[in-house]
Amino acid sequence: MCYWAAITGDLNLIEKALSSEVNVNFQNSSGHTPLHVAVMHNHEPIVEKLLENGADVNLKTNEGFTPICLAKLKGYTSITDLINAFELSLSLHFPENSSN
Image (cartoon, rainbow, N blue to C red):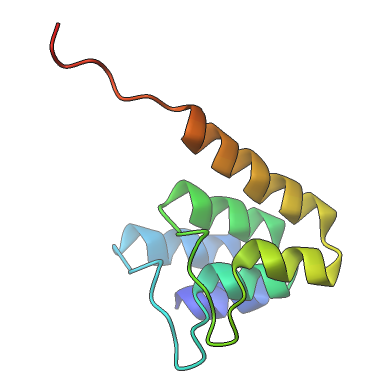
């Protein structure tokens, strides 16, 4: 269901899939995750939903491509920017100091 939503850009379907606790990082036989597929089809809202729900931006296809590599190769600047912003927000997040 996640892959089909990534192919078609169906937001309702991706939300339904995510609510059923689907593994957003499942890799098919080619190593593609739903995030790779959404990037390849230029479905920015699906990319955003997947990122918000734990999609791993560092997973590579069997050919060695990460989602951001695919976005850059395809010239999808807005998706490249979205993934970069997501990675930056993760790197700026610091866990609370539990010793206080």
